[in-house]
Image 1 (cartoon, rainbow, N blue to C red):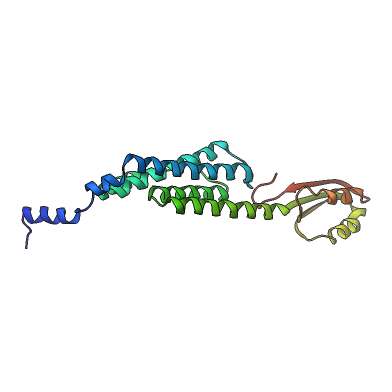
Image 2 (cartoon, rainbow, N blue to C red):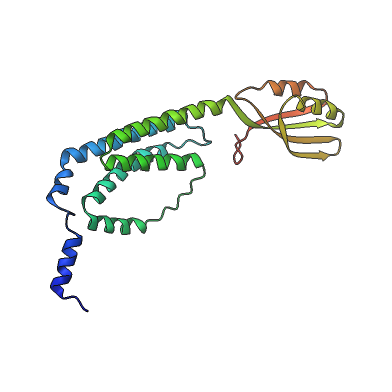
Length: 230
């Protein structure tokens, strides 16, 4: 049975009843919008400071860090718009779905900060200001604790080039530490050995021990993260 035009209009009116009403418009008053944007800016600033002073990745990008503040505020604005009108929210979701970001995120930590900014923006836009502040502070403290704990011991690549006579000396020195052999190349009377070791940050004592060993030509220590080296 086909619905008449009047019946169809009544059905649409019933489904959309309550959206875009005066109560919803009053909820998005100027003070509320300003409070949500300020909340997003404050949370974004906290994320900015944590990223700036406690970043444990390889390459720090100030442009990316500033983007975190903007993402937090913009996400709060989007959430406020979506909560105001369901019809407008559907159009916004459709518009945002066609956006494609081509910038590659090489460090997983950067992806984590992006999700942190988006989560803070969502809570601010939803009016959960206390949740946004407490959640941002908790994540900030947790990340700082993890960063400090991580800095105690770091992975390094130890590259030793030595003569054939120093084989026993190098093996004895490696036996005093935990290591994982990465490669070993023998070229004529010389050998180049690469091992992954874990020592305290800026502890170069092992360099002195290997350098003092008879028959060792060169010793190199590189910070190792699995993908990048410093």
